[in-house]
Each structure stands twice: as C-alpha cells, then as structure tokens.
Length: 586
Ligand SMILES: O=C(O)c1ccc(O)c(O)c1
Ligand SMILES: [Mg+2]
Image (cartoon, rainbow, N blue to C red):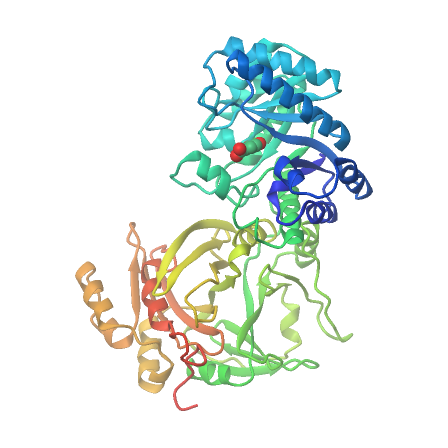
C-alpha cells in the first residue's frame, strides 16, 4: 500500500521534513498547515520540491470549526475555505481535511452540519478539491467516527467523504468494527497513530503522546484490517503529534515511521515474527582493564581468545562474556543472541531498515552478522559457530547459569524507537513500562521479553541527575544467589553495592525474609502469585555494572520496587569526579 506521513510528525523546517520523509521511502505527505505558514517558500516551490523528491501531496490539513455554525459565521467560513482551495491549487493538493467543530458557537444539529458540509463540498469540487471530514475525539458535537459518517452520508455529495484517524477512534474506546459499514469509496483518507494508555484528557493525550503504530498499546493493525475490509485503497498515513518526535532527529524519526508501517503491513499479512531469539549467546564488554577484576571477583575466567581481534572469552557456569580490549571506557557494546535462523533474522532486520553492520572477517572465521540497536549497541544473530573462533579449552565451574537480561540506556528521545526496534526486529513483547524515582529525577523504563522469557531486555531513558552517567548492566542468572553472595561478601566485599539498612527495615516489615539478606546486600521482590526474586548489584565500572539474579516460582519481573534504592546508592553527586565507583584499592 502507499505510505504517507503528516509533516507534523517529524521535526525541522518543511524542506527538511520533505527530504527526510522522501529519504525514508514514503510515497506521499500530508502538509500540516502550520508547516506551510512558517515556510518562506511559496506553495508552487513546495509543490516542486515534493515532486522532485518523488512525493505526492496527499492531503492538506486541518480546516477547523466549519460545520453547523450560525449563518453569519458560515459566510465567513466559506470565504476562508475559498482561500484555502486557492493555496491547495498552488500546492497541487486535492484533498482537504476538515475536522469536526470544537467552537463554542457550533450548533448541535446534524441536519445543519450536513447542509454546510454539502455546501463546502460543492465549492471544493469547483476547484477540483475533495473534503475528508474527521471526527476529533474532543469535537464539540461530533466526536465519534460513525457520527461523522452519518453526517457525510446525509450530505450526500461525491466530493465529501470521511477521514478515519485511529487515535480518535481507539482513544475513545469506540469499536472499529463499525468501519465496515462505511463504503470504501467514502473513506477518503486514513490516518494512523498509536498511543500509550494514559488516563488523561484526550486532547492533551492526542497532542503530546501519540506515537507510531507498534510503539503504544492500541490495536492499530486490527483497525486497519476493518478499513481495508471496507474497501479503502488510499494511503496508510502516519499522523503523530509527539513532543519528543518534534525534537528528535528528523531523518531518524521518518525512518522509524517507515519501520512501523512495514511492521504493520507484516502484521496485516498475518506474517508472524519468524525468527525470535532463543537465548543470549554472549554479552560483549569493552574493557581497558578494570572489568577483569570485577569478572574475576565474580568467578569468571578467560577460556579463549579470538584469532584476529583483541577479544577474550570469559566464562563461568553457563554464562559467556566477551571482553573487547579496544574500548576506552568499560561499556556494554554488543549482545549475541542465539537465533534459530541467523540469516533469516538478518534478512528480517534489513527489511525493517536495520542494515547489517560492516564487519571484517578473516576467511577461517565464523560468519556472524550484527545490526545496530537504536543506542548503537551491536546485536549479533548467532548459531553455535561463533564459539569455535575462540576455541575454549576448558570449562569454568560456577553457579551462574547464563545471562538473564541486559539493560540498555537510550537517549531520551529514542525511547519509542527502541521499543519498536526490539518489538519488530527481535520479536520481543512489551512487559510494560514504569517510572522510577532517582534522587535527581525520574527514570523511565520498559521491559521487553521473548514469549518464554529466554531473552529479556530492559530499556531505560538516559536522562538522570546531573553529574551521573547513563549506565548499562548485564544481569546474570543463578540458581543459588545466597551462596554466591556469601562468597562475594567474604572474598570481595569491595565489589558489592552497599544497600541501606532502612531498606531492610522496610523489607522485613513487608515480607518474611531471611535476615541474612541484610548482611549480604541482597534485594528481594515478590509478585502477586508468590513468584520470588533475589538480586544483588556490583559497583559500576566505567559505564557498566553487573546484577546477579535468581527467579523462583515464575517471577517474570525485574525487581522494579527496588530500583529506586539502587539508583540512589549508585548516584554520584555532580562534581564528584568520575561518576563511577571502581573496585576498592585499584
Ligand atoms: O489536534 C488536532 O487539532 C488535530 C488536527 C488534525 C487532525 O487530523 C487530528 O487528528 C488532530
Ligand atoms: Mg487526524
């Protein structure tokens, strides 16, 4: 299907927007009036730019507060419309969006609304323009799509149809099944937006929190299915009002919008995600030295090294970490995911506009392809061949069974992009998001997991208190966390993040927990069905720290209740120098 996007959905000047939209592969645009008003170029020039870029102008919008007005305002509104038709002729646009009236002067009379819209359609037709009438969710008298359709049907003019907007329909909880009652040729336009569920005024929700399909919680694909079943064959057009998108990189947002439409089309075709990763093969850490102390302290040891790259394999029990000596600062730089079909996973990623990263490979080395996650972390799709490059010679016994999850920090304006990436490219499902208080701000966090929890990722927003560095962490799973904690407390107490006694006073008041947790600095959480979670944190080295976790009884979370404690302990005040702790005495 043809793909369009409203210029309001991305940041920049109108010409920057058009360039980025074309570069992302869209076929057309909706020109949002404000973008035109602030543009120094005359409409003819904009028309030519769009044409040069291969973009059609599919819609001009919005035209407000028109229908069902008192007679004296009607005349003025018709004159206003004439001026807009002239602009549209110069722009080469032939479809005008009229949104339902929000004016206090509007009259709640469908006959009058139909009569006025018919008049408008007649005038429009004389200019070769058609009118798409949209019910805003907060329209004064018309705020339901079926109400807009009844008025359009009554007006009965070939140049008048409806514009359906997934946000207005789904935000009100209207059933989209009714769309099938609207003849496809009377659906003049379809606008798509998703949104997170928020309990707030619908206008504020719409103007600030819309996002691309797949980034929020609406069933946008389900709605589109009804529109297609009704016989609509116009473009799928993204229309997103979002404060973050308005500030983010134009090209990136446009590309992200395209990714969301490609994923949406896959869903429409009933194309389930074919290659969901089945586990973590490894986590790769850049390290100039200090991470080795941390890992040795945790019981890891080197078991092999790469034949051509400065990368060592470190193992313990079932966990594999790679230490890459090229990094200046300890950081998490790559994740290897076990994939049932690495080539298929790569192909899928490329379809979703995540190209394979260039990588040097000696002839005898295993083929291993990676794509970049939105924060730059490399995601490798692995079968077992990668391990032979390291020719590990021994096993390192230990309690750690593998990587439980990886937590990455996104720049704040790439949070939605990351959610869509992990969902569409990796097939992970959202487990919900939350806000966690930090002593100097709020951290937004979203957990995503493969259906059986084999791969878990936590994405956080980078914006925390001044002086702090965005942190990443690798959480390692073990079957007997207390044993590991006892050994660490005895042999390497300097590696453990100290937890305030007040936390344990509260924990013991809430739960019957082993008093030893307090001695060991182990945190605890419990879910409603009795699932239990024990975890502890190491100090931060560079940008990374390690978490050790033990799950029991189907616990599916991440100890969110304890996150504020960790953040407070980790926080290094502004001006305290390097915003990291390092193992004592090193
Ligand atoms: O928020 C608005 O006013 C507005 C304008 C035009 C639209 O198509 C829309 O969905 C919302
Ligand atoms: Mg709309």
